[in-house]
Length: 348
Image (cartoon, rainbow, N blue to C red):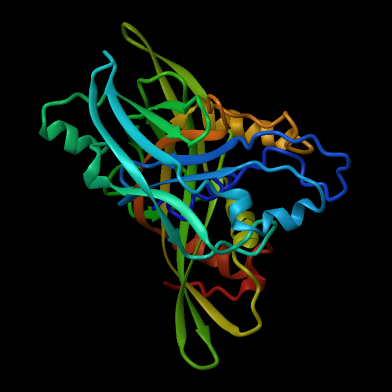
């Protein structure tokens, strides 16, 4: 699946885009054909690939009431396809995704149930680098989305280019301790040959919570943005390096924002951390930026869907995993001004 919808990353992207304003007092209304609204972010390493397809709606009365009726937001007979092609335009695989009702969505404007996505599994279309390599196919792949809706003469389509993994320079693979206060503080550094690449870093923290009776495992994450390239001179040319330095005040502030204060928790003990680089094209960056500054969705939302609204893109991830904090870093977690109220202990 999409790693908690990536949540800011994708956890951060809207799960559904409404093609008209949600105001409850629009009168008179202008009747119009529904517009396909698409959300699809593909990670080749997910076991399942999901596309959310809904439709815009308009009519007399309260828009919030329409949003809670499944027939108002879902098409009944739409067909959804994914097709992969190499850079020469040769089709490699084509697969149809079928509607499936998944767990109800969180309460909100739209009906929480049924919660329908179009889905296929990773075995039906070769998107993972190693699957293509086994068949002697270079990982130079464009992925196409095609949606047909009965009664609509035109297809809704979109395209994204699958990204290669970044090459991590630092930390090294055997790096297991995270130090913020040493001579060489913790940082990530990597290279990537492709242009139009957007990076974020997802930090995943696992810890154990001690309760009045028993214990439980917990996990939180946050996403870091604002990563810019630097041109570094080498003998014979230049090289583009991406880097991110983890400043302790920022790190502990992010923990404070991510971990809820809970009076039932008597203590917390950190387990480990993952630092994961997420690589996508510029589509996701533009989508996020436009939606952050838009005051509503009326014509201002970014979309890369032809004959529709929404976003279709892909990302890939690579990181360093199971990292542990140094002793001074554990002390700051337990006694520092940002996190001492969260009852972390200064041991593992």
